[in-house]
Length: 443
Image (cartoon, rainbow, N blue to C red; front, side):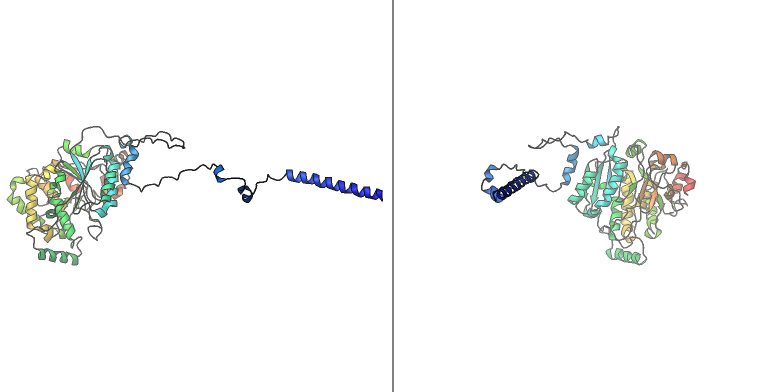
């Protein structure tokens, strides 16, 4: 019995030690024990726990368009406490990004007639002019409107123009019916043109604009300080780089008026314009230059008008009319000539006849007739190397080498210069100019 009891005791001891060994082995392979929150709560205080607190980031202010220019002049900021300092970086200034071209500047400006709703179309035009030319010359830009410009228009255009910007409102008397116009007669004319579907025939705004561009824009106080102007309209495109200063070329070569496109005017809009012109010629023979360009305007010595004109009619954007774009616009000219007695007499003679409202005279034929009669032929210049587009016409420089040199991206087959409806060949023939090599392939 004793022997059996001793044997059972040994079995029990062996089992106990076996269980004890298995326990130590199993616990050594488990992760360390972490007391529960309930257990820790009785032993720890929140005051004993040091938690690093990161201050919340400052609220980002709304974007300020005026701060865009600061990107070019900002100074390195002082690093905040607790953060790694940023490397000191000084951005390039605009002049370093696009150094100004050397040489003297002419007293000149760009001038644009636009409304606030034209902002994105004129922004595109500004970038075209700036990227292709003005970023290296920094000429001023004058903006005119028959209503006050809003803050958005001013901020965006100011940020895009490399020179100074000027904003002016057109006087009411320059954008309204003059006292001598018969309003009922003018209304009947607009209704008749609407029925005949004449482009802009029923538009009052278009007539005000053509009259303003013909006789008043150069008299605006903001233009008084300048000698030359370059007219730029919304939604134009310049296809080529301009590697020289056209203003300086005009001044150095005593040019008064220039163009890149010419064509025949829509006869239904100017039925009596030439009769009014002949009346002026008879009344003011002293203003007609002996070396004029009458042959550009007339095929019979001045008896009739062939309807040719240099393209400067103002293209109508949707903000001015519901019609589509029709005329391209490019004009670089001398403001002193437009302010001369000869030109003022010419405009006022036409204005008194009422054709801006009784018909639909455009500023393109008015400027063209005036330049052709009042200036010597040598004072008018054709810019072959300034590639220009506005629906629906394209001037793409004639000559493969020239286009490559100027980094042009226009299609030469779209060039309007030598087409049958263009008057540019007539200008070359009148002035005995050699046409560019390759013009026959674009005719």
